Image 1 (spheres, helix red, strand yellow):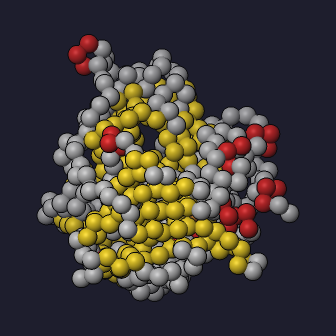
Image 2 (image 1 turned 30 degrees about the vertical axis):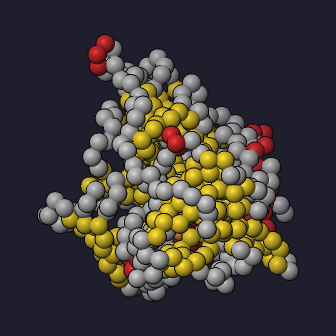
Image 3 (image 1 turned 45 degrees about the vertical axis):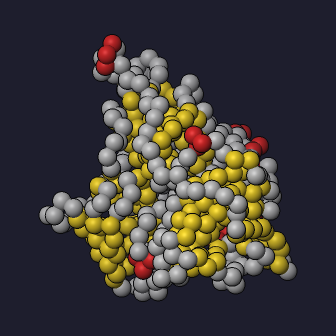
Length: 470
Ligand code: C2O
Ligand code: CU
């Protein structure tokens, strides 16, 4: 049986089958579900500069399909997990307890921190069932980050172990409203349980679910006010799915990305968000009060004809009566943001090559022709700035993620990117058959991983290490 037919669920509420064919969807519009934001986890520390929280990973039950129970893995019992709220410069202390029946760790995706707090296998032994670990570090950068296990991540993340961190800083834009948008998906069987079967198509593209979820909900309704300035903090936590957001009649004004606000905001008609990436956008809802729009996931060609898929609905956007915002109070979108330090460019002194190949009958994902842990580490002097060519020889895009440091894109296929495109990234799409030149400053010693954030690829070898000398 092919994957396509296997994922077909004959449930009326499942109008959002993500198999890519409109004819396969059930009839009738789904009733919009309520919009739920991840709840902030309580801060138990009275010191205003310290955020101290408890996190527990455990099994929980969730209803994705009417009348069916899905056993998920959850931080503090919810999917998505809770929100950690902090200000830049705060000390974060996380008392973590592993109440799962299996090992885990927490990796703080995008956060610059001391190596021993990174939660990656290069630096932390897995926390056994029943075990505890205290993570503690200072939040150096304002931005929107997320956390997830770095043990069996292909399994644990898709079952629900992900949460978000919002770090506020100086000079944040004034918005009338702000929403968190956690994009994910789930591959479920008709009985509500996760479909764990795996085949070469799933391995190749990363596991894509048959339910598309926004903050853990199918097709929730987002209320915005006409003329008001709405800020969206967006993250894609899916194993393999790329989200390419489109909202009819609107562009997204991108004001920030992985590592915080950018100096030169720009408009995106479609906002492409690869697994692991974040975008910070503003939009002014256009339309008469009472208008309902559909936020969709537009097709995007990331290889293997994925661009031929049908658009898929993600959420309903309902425009409500806005405050009187005419005249001087009229909202406008910002054209500039805070400056960020530009790292020096220059010729690449290192090349990392990504590719995929059958080794015997097994599909492998390669870094410099090898699979992790056989990929030779890259050694860097502490404090050194390195220009690196990231070469993707594969016939599909791979989202590259670097732990512990931000990097900036210098060039695509040898052509310098515009000065305006300056941004601090930790996750970046490497388009198929192309070379992207990046620069990073390695100012924190330790063993830092880099890998493809399609988790099926990372676990099949597409991962390496950068060793920064003490
Ligand atoms: Cu979000 Cu090494 O990962
Ligand atoms: Cu990949």
